[in-house]
Length: 72
Image (cartoon, rainbow, N blue to C red; front, side):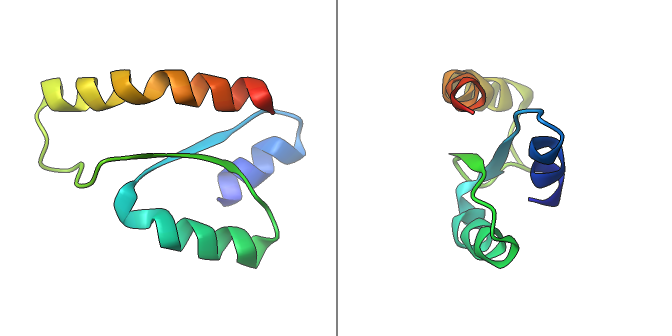
């Protein structure tokens, strides 16, 4: 959140990407900072996935990430 807020504060669009495990934490952090960043959530967990599975998650999320950056 802080990184995205810093980017946005300098006029650089940012999008947070996290796994679904962190939806509530992201909302709480956003509220605490008074900042509502663009967020994209991918299925949890991440750490035990194969390279092919990670590529598939990225492929599935990239369009939403690009749309979020463009909307800012």
